[in-house]
Picture 1: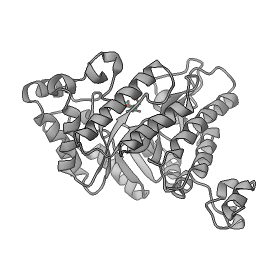
Picture 2 (picture 1 turned 90 degrees about the vertical axis):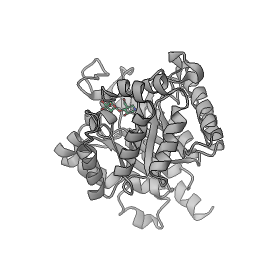
Picture 3 (picture 1 turned 90 degrees about the horizontal axis):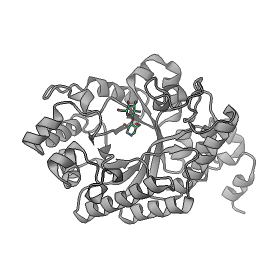
Length: 363
Ligand code: 9MR
């Protein structure tokens, strides 16, 4: 038995990355620490309205996270509500929050069919590609040297829309045609050749018909982008899972392998675990959320192409699944979808994350 195997067999197995057991007991276990011990990145999403009002949230970010992604502020409609009048003050505040807490920033999203300025549809129709060239170029230039990891295109696949190659029937597809996705990556690389450009997508994990169709379509899209020579770095897998929907480890593992075989890296970009279908006690719900986290993370982190993971928030208190306009549970309790509860106490999901980082192979 070597030292690592010996340490792994001890009750304090979580500390295998540290040199001595005695020393390990004095060091706080943090998600960013456990992740980085394996060469992985851990971070979370935040919005200004949350960090502005909550010191506990800020403290948890600075202790637990190595990265942050804006949940809202970097969307096109927020930046350029009026054409030509770009206002980066809201996303700039996320970047300064990041620098005061020593966090890397992920850019999200350059091109997405939601939260678009009203004028975009008409402008795309009359002017075509120039409209996305201006937006991507300005956005990436503004953050040059500050943001290197970007979701360049978000959620461009929707099999239900019935379009060729399962492309989403968005304003981009309608006005620019199917090659707009490859063009977005080219425009981004011209604006800032130093970035890691991701295609980001949801609905890729469950073993049911909608996710199976989306996995196939995303693989086809990625293979096409690679064959066209598009400068894409990786796939962002959002990870909005739901307890009760089927998950098959080998199906998901082979999907990750196929993505990696295309020469792409992978980031889990928006992990949360929706418990709206569960009617059990809170502690049983928390156990089931953690169980699904463990199943998902075991497969995800085992794939060496996966470079990191961000949760879509830290505390249930601020999750989009508990917002006033998106009440996902009908029994008056909060959706227990994130690693921390509303008081910032760690939940079983937190420990599932910690243990998964701990078990992950080193990059
Ligand atoms: O969590 C975000 C929510 O607060 C916003 O209202 C919404 C629309 O901008 O976007 C949510 O985040 C989405 C992300 O940007 C893309 N993937 C799905 C996320 C959840 O809807």
